[in-house]
Length: 224
Image (cartoon, rainbow, N blue to C red):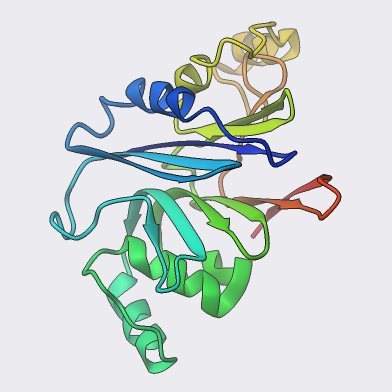
C-alpha cells in the first residue's frame, strides 16, 4: 500500500511544494518506507512508498527515459513481467525491476489505452509534460482509492479524502445528497463524496486533464 498526491496549476503558476508535502504527510501510514517528489513549476507529484518490488530501484515518482512522462503509483501490476517483455520488443529500455516503470513505457506505447493492458490493483497519476496532460486511472474493482478536486485554479488529487482536506483553501461544505446516500446504502457511491466539490474516481475509470495553450483545462472522465 502506498499513498499518492499532487497538484497541477491550470494557469501555469508555480505549485506550493510544501502543500503537496503536507498532503503526503497525511498519507505516511500508507507508505512508511520512503517519500519522493517530482516538481516542475506548475506540477508537483508526491509519493509515500511501501517498498515491496525493487526496493532499491523503485523510488517514485518515476519517469521514462527522456523524463517527459512521470508517474506516481499505488498498487501492483500483476502482469508487469509479460508487459515488460512486450515493451522491450517495441524498443523500450528499462532501468529498474519495478512494475511502476511498466506504466510510463506502456503509456508511451499505447497512450491512455495503456490501462486496458494492466491486470492488477492500482491507482496512479501520470503527467505527460509534452502534451501538458494529467492522466488518472483506477483499477477495475476499485481496490485502490483516488480522490480529486478542482478549486482556486488548481487540480488536486490524493489517495485519501483526509489528505485533500489538508489544503486550507478547500471548502468543507457537506454534500447533503451524499449524506443521504450514506444513510440509505451504508456508503457514498462514486463519484460523490461527503463533501461538495470533492470527487472520487469510480472503479474502472480514467480521468484526463489537458491544459491548452490558452491555459484552459479540459477534463474528461470515462469508463475503460
